[in-house]
Image (cartoon, rainbow, N blue to C red):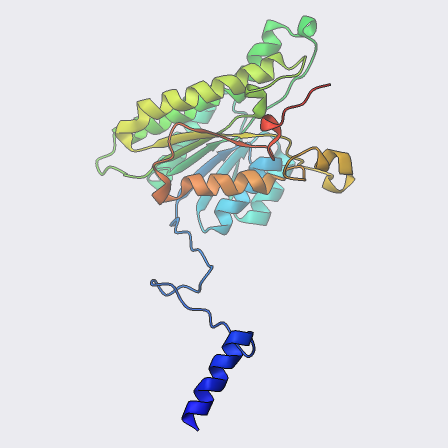
Length: 282
């Protein structure tokens, strides 16, 4: 009987009948196909976190259990984001460099340090070149670019003066694909985002002794509102088949923040559904 049983099972196996797959656990005890990311309870600061991409970044870090604060000039949405995520909202205009530096210093004094800084805040002042004044240009730089210097410098001063050194640090800058390709009438914005790419690898070298990695993300078209109103043409022109959402950027921020990912350093990561790689002729 035993021999017949084995013969029957072998015949079923050959015919693909009555075979079942039993998921096995990995050597670390996880279910097959599952991945666990270990970030730890990190102290995070995000600029421009009240809405859009910034709000998604704040939410992602809060969901990971991080102690998160963000600043923004938008009181209404800032308050709503804080209530929805549990993050701390700090009303602040980042163009005021002294206030930004003071805010960071106070936060680091209270929390002991900052582990992750995401420089997300930015404005787009698109207007014809002949109508773009030097004042207009400098205002865009003051909001989009100068905060990178202020946040990095303030963190570096704090880390340098630490008695017990923190071996972990991340600065993540949000640039744009307009640093790589352009349309007319985007001079100030494109200049600020291009400078972010250069500052990213420059800051990376300067902060190396403090064990702080510096990377930037260049989003393409990220729809922050009215996603349902986009047309099929809007989506289908992207090789990925859709327009981006804020969570696409937030997930990359989380990836860059992982302690094991310290070998990603000084990089610009383009997240645009493949558009900058798409060859288009009229």
